[in-house]
Image (cartoon, rainbow, N blue to C red):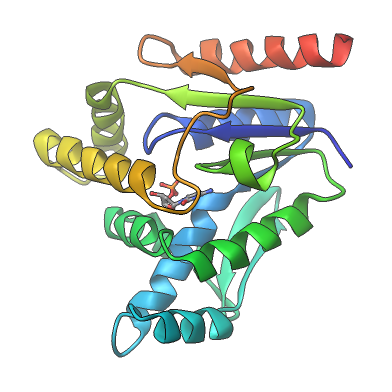
Length: 223
Ligand code: DC
């Protein structure tokens, strides 16, 4: 087994930005597990009727062919052979992902896939249940938090950079709804693992957070 770094936390805390940089510096594989839930959400949305009963959910899961590939070092997500990497980056896809991630068969399928993919790699994996469920024996676990207004402001700026004008109050409401759903679902809710280190990124810039994790990494390998 390789060296495993698990990063969990709520939407917009900066997990993927940070995880990507840390993985690059260490020469590890970065795995964005949220992208897999987003691809599943896309598939559920594409059904004639959004799967809600146990039978419908299982059927959708059976036909879901989700896979990831690394192209020029970055993760691409494929759904039934189609590269959906850009399609899944909308707010709607995030909300649908949060909804389908409450379904047991969806989680089972993706957790097994994530565990298989990371079995023999050095990885930095980010998500909601990485330290608690996917990689319970990870060498380093981080729980990344940030004030909801700070997270909303970051998202607002990201959208603005893409030329999308949005309403910060709507983003705050969206983040709060998603936090609630992710923290209160019955299966593998978002929570800090007992042995995870809490990093509140509200007043930190990207480099400071990356350096904090690199320092924790150095401490682990010196042990
Ligand atoms: O990190 P993200 O915004 O791309 O994740 C989208 C949704 O997917 C998130 O709101 C909850 C779900 N998710 C999950 O349940 N478990 C994970 N390991 C990753 C994401």
